[in-house]
Image (cartoon, rainbow, N blue to C red):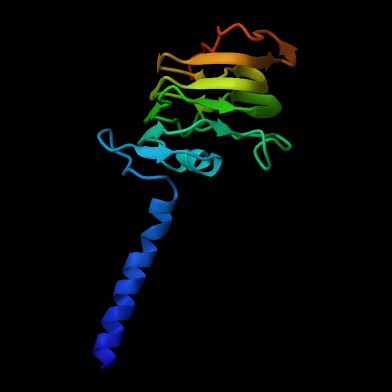
Length: 175
């Protein structure tokens, strides 16, 4: 009987230990053939923990809510030290209300340093402030296909320089 109980407890531990990884996203496995599905702000925030994986967005995501719009706002995904090298497919959906308020920070954008690829992702009603290397979807970019922006303001050295143009989506600076 003790052996049976021990086996059951071991199985329960094994099964429940894998739940947090699967709960991070709405489905998928992070591969190119089976990208992780991103449908909420919390799942979007989890992308930063898997910088070399593949993702597909399955809904519009609103970041104009606590805690994403408070203080410094959204922390860019990827940095000079840990670049995003994966693939993010926005599937035509948008990220609304992105706020980044780091007037002394470099590499400010939805992605901080991007060496992977981004397809069909849009920003809407966003405000991004940084010292240098400011971009809407990414500061350091390599491969963007069909990105777009609407009513997005980018501030560089505290000046507005690309309001609502649909242009200058990336910072055009090498990392």
